[in-house]
Length: 355
Image (cartoon, rainbow, N blue to C red; front, side, top):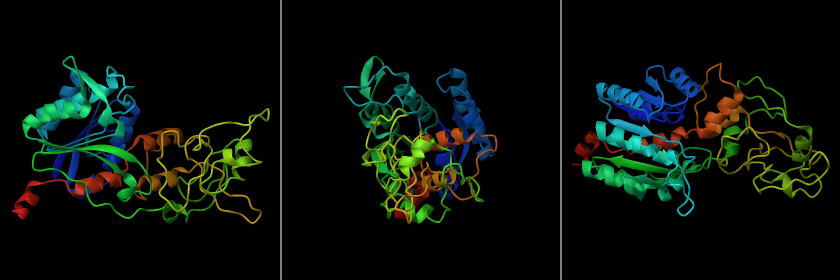
């Protein structure tokens, strides 16, 4: 079993299936106390060091623990809010520089394999290092290639790797052994295959299935969403379209007040997955005899767990509120994507077999 360390661990969603690939995360770091407590409950065998990795005290504590455990794998999912496109980026945004602490720990530990995950924009985002403006990709290369690392920055979609949700991510696949390639794509999984079996629910209703209870919504929202077909936005309804309380038509993006499609992977589940007016959050619905559509609501927690690729037994702490759970799911990395990438991670035994 390879021992590993996790930085910017959130609540550990990315690591759900990591043991299946012979890796045991034994040290983790998370800034936010409530997320660290969530992580500790979900991964009690791991030493969670809560604190700001940019502080010497926290960084040194993580490095010391990881060295003691002889960690040979590093996974890091630094926050992405500071990322922006070239020409529009703010290279002095401190969030863009968090990657420096991932690289610093890599330089201290020199693990055989490193996986860094972020949004696709990271590949065109800059930071300032030693007074010079560098693309983050070039910074990683300049710091790690001299240590013998082979760096493969790729963009992948979780829907190609066992997850019924489209979610494009940039991944730095980094190894000392050989170029870490992406695995072959898998057949896409539809929303219908995964959640159609769950009972239909309207706003505020509950079922006997744990976490399959519908949020309560505004009556006006329910009225126009009942007239919105699967895969369509209520903004395009000719009669029952979104209106303000004074009757004025509401304007918005094509993804606003939009129902998910049944026969495709779900759209990206964001941190705003509890908002009926946000991006692609409304249940696909089922056409009823009167021509209206059922399930005028956002997805339940159970539906979100399934579409994120979490196992049936995944159970968050009882103290965690629904809104908090929705937020950390929206921030999380689909775990089957990570598992698929680790399936083809270079390892010493594998190289011996090839020779």
